[in-house]
Amino acid sequence: MSKRPYEFVSGSTSISIPDWESDGESDRDNSFTELHSLSTMLSPWQCEMNDVEELMIACLRNSRRQVQKVLARNGNGGEEWTNIIEIALTITTRLGHVQATAALMHSIQDEKAKLYFQPKQKDQSLFENALFMQDWALADVLLEVGTRCRLNFKDIFKIRQRDGFGNVLGFATFRRLGYCSRQQNLVRRLIKMGANCRTSEMLEEEDPLHNAIVAGSIPIVKSIVKHVPQVPAKTVGSADAACDRAGEIVTIVENARRDWLSIQEAKPHRNDSKRLKLGDN
Image (tube, rainbow, N blue to C red; front, side, top):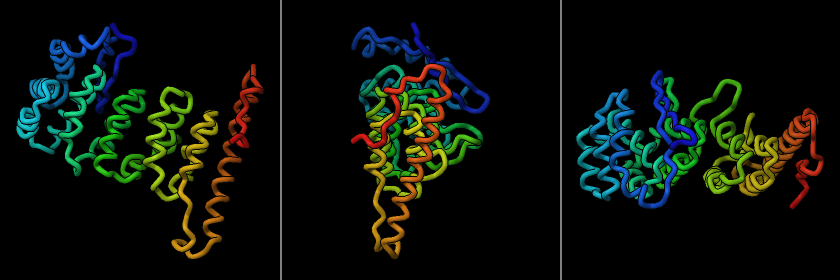
């Protein structure tokens, strides 16, 4: 029945949601009993589970009026409302309900989009949870919400530092996706969103460029280098400052390459043919 359960973590509460293997579109169209069983599993949350189930069914039926009715009943933007959206999004993406997921995404108000990327006290945010549980479908959906709501790059990836691991983008996303070529579309989306941030924000300890090189993912390295914005001389006062930025990139590439090579040296059976060649075009 399940290859890997999806574990949704909130404080001391941890719920595993089964990962159904779909046998075709019919499975996705006839899953009201699945929704019911899943919503009962999520009962430890302090919100009305009947509302969660009603919300997802309304989404499956594409009833925007009913969606708004359920959300309005739960404060339309308060904590209850946020919890219900989080749970519903988690379940609909896990079951592969594209229509229901889209309806939920469009119900998120622009000013509330940040809530899904910001941690709640000591809890992980929904986005962080998706990344660390490797639920790429949910992470991609949330990034689409962030793009539609025009969130700043820092709103999503620079929320907080993790002890010894660097920021969420550097560790959770690129370090893991660097080993998974199937996730190139998500990587491209992240790089595109980061293209508008200041160069210095991409050049911190545990930054994505460093991690991509250490992971040996040449496509990601090339994409990041290509998309890192140039700093116009007029905005910084002199052309020398722009050259300094280029120097920072070169330094990070060199340091990361050294780290990557040292990792390869430590391996008992190293394949020299797979060494990272930064000079390739």
